[in-house]
Picture (tube, rainbow, N blue to C red):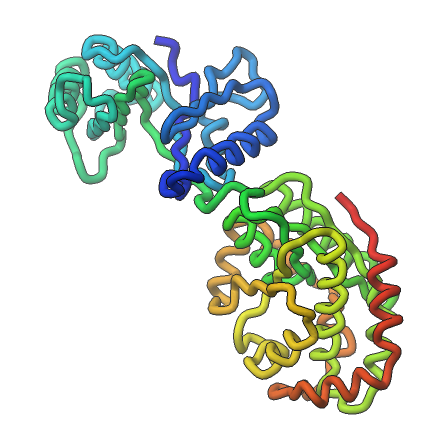
Length: 395
């Protein structure tokens, strides 16, 4: 037996896509190729992808490390490092005995609990799944007297998939990222503040198949360079989920200065967000994005009350605004930020544009007509046009 030299990759929702399934699978294959490079063969068959066999000396490691890496690609339900053998009772049994022996040697002990789980997708194979699992279990017990059967929580879960293209034997399953492959649902533009919420919102849209570009509003020189560096690191962290993340940076300090000097100080943050939305929408229209994304969570801060969200949204010209965290509480968002690897960066103590010049008593039930009257006191179109024109993109 060659050992574990390939990865069985099981797509998630893609299996439910009916006539469009091939498109989603092609997008997933493209994303896998981007992640893995050209060294690993990728075979796509009905309901499965097979990565490998892994070339000798592959710089990425072994089948286990490849399975863990591939599990982080959106569209993947789970992965298993595996070996492939011909579909015969003798070949499968021989491979199972050899793999169990290797696993016991790796553990340095001859006693362990195990279970055999057979999935027979190839109905031409004579024995039914349960019958064949019992037969294999008996052979393993005879070969390794220290084994004991535990069907609920086995220490060694031995899996066998019997399929038309061959039989696959494995000991582990790594939970995948789920969702849909990035790129199958178009491009969106996410407003990235540098806090905890907006990177999580971006990740949520990636999981639903969107390629996400990021837009940051830069308040230098009122805040230090560290704030922008923090945002760049957040973009790099998200890059690991979709590859080649684009970050747009908008100079926002002049607009904030003009809005700071207006009456009704409590409206200041709401006005900031209305201007951000207008600028982001025009950039999105120029760049071909299908929607805007924000990290809003209903009622979390004063600017995110139902009334204030309505005041902010009224500044839009009609481009859809997605708020994937609208029903999350802070603990849920923080837990997800830790999972995706952005939390530790987000909590670094650098100011961002949302907290700069924050009023002591922000309005919680803003009114659209009041916001519009205040905006009429500044040369709004000139400020927005300049911000859009000066936006610079980084990758």
